[in-house]
Amino acid sequence: MINVNINGVEFKNPVIAASGTFGFGEEYNNFYDVGILGGISSKGLTINPKEGNDGIRVYETPMGMMNSVGLQNPGIDKFIEVELPKMKKYNTNILANVGGATIEDYEMACEKLNQTDIDIIELNISCPNVKSGGMAFGIKGCIAAEVVSKIKKITNKPLMVKLSPNAEDIVDMAYSCVNAGADSLSLVNTFKGLAIDINKRKPVFNNVFAGVSGPAIKPIALRMVYEVSKAVNVPIVGLGGISDYKDAIEFMMAGATAIQIGTINFSNPLAGKEIIKGIEEFLVKEGIKDINEIIGIAKI
Image (cartoon, rainbow, N blue to C red; front, side, top):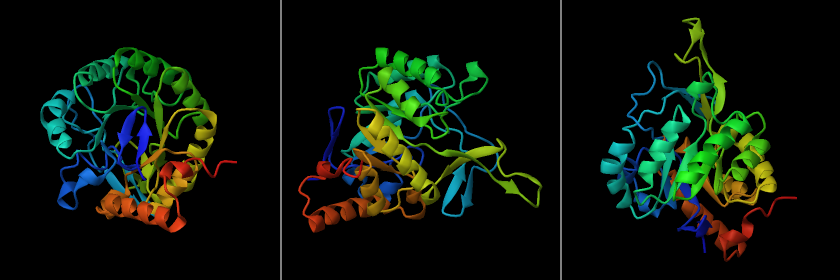
């Protein structure tokens, strides 16, 4: 058995496509039936449409990549009207990843999502808070707790909060979000990084810094999932550099109930299908009847 349960939502398997790396699923459905996935996390959504950042948006690094896309998306209304009906046809769980520049942005977006049949809201608190000088909501626990608390009061959906590894203290951040009402956590989002074009003698990205992802961050992400899973008692979705079924199993043994795959989708569009198959074969080989038996088994 490879199904898992997160906040009362049953997932046919623990493999979820990560936000920002899978669009709304349509393109990848040309490679395989994305309905076999446990879930799909939508492109990051904002109350109004966003064109995203100017200049270079994606930059390859050894064992990974950097991105500065800037939450390009059609906006909540168009998502609900156009993209969500198409996603529902895949017969898999839908996580709506929500971002905003103010708490009011988050509130308006989540109030609209309350009227839909999405399964989980995934709150992206890595967004810059314009009312706090551009500091991301996910850096300080007290600021994160404020937005989580307000969204929890107005939403009728399970609330998963996506943590940034750039937080001052990832464990304290997890505590703050759970105490404020988070039903589950996903971690980690991208790391803050820098690339410089030595010929142009300036940063590669117009925004100077960008998000680092891919296999290079896996050991650090895995450590953070391990630490957080020991500190809080809510379901955790682990992500960060997962490339194959062995990586996925590691995250689950570290305490994750499910995992998300992101950067690997770009280099191997069949990754989701292959990871599910690999997990199934591992369980058979090891004589494990229920995948839930391995969740947190490596914690000491």
